[in-house]
Amino acid sequence: RGQGEEIGLVAFNGGVRVLQQPTRSASSLQTALAHPPALGYGTRIYDALESALALIKKAKLSTAAIVLLTDGADVGSKTTVQRAVALAKARNVRIFTVGLRSKSYDPHLLRSLAAETGGAYAEASSPAQLAPIYTSLSGRLASEYVLQYRSLAAPKSQVNVQVSISGFGSSTSSY
Image (cartoon, rainbow, N blue to C red; front, top):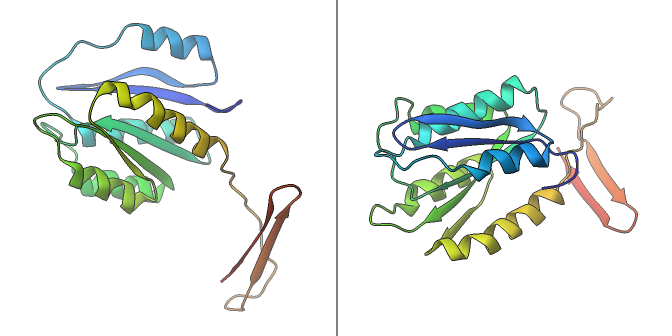
């Protein structure tokens, strides 16, 4: 995680449990991760996403991403995938899905969640393959920036935007 980033933790199986509210405290995150939740029947993916999105809203984060680790088979959610995606889109939250193969593995849902929210999908056939996936995601998320500006252009006029960052390059976009 990058310096100053807030991270929250949500665990889910037959229920959904917030392990840690969004925090900058590495020690709080380590404490929350030191005691993994007990395994249980069910995989309430959509309910967990709704819970994570509620944490993001409550924390008043201007930008956020969710990293979802699951086998992709939802069992028992009260929320629908459509609602979870709509909430993520409304809050500009990208969902990065990590599929861990199991007997119930369903990559289609995970690919769809990532694609519909602007995230990305990765797949692991064993827990040992998770570390490089998380390292890659960490690097990607830590090197992204959100740029906001207020245009003085009149409505419906062509706007060309160019951003240059010394040492990184430039990019141009139009709308």
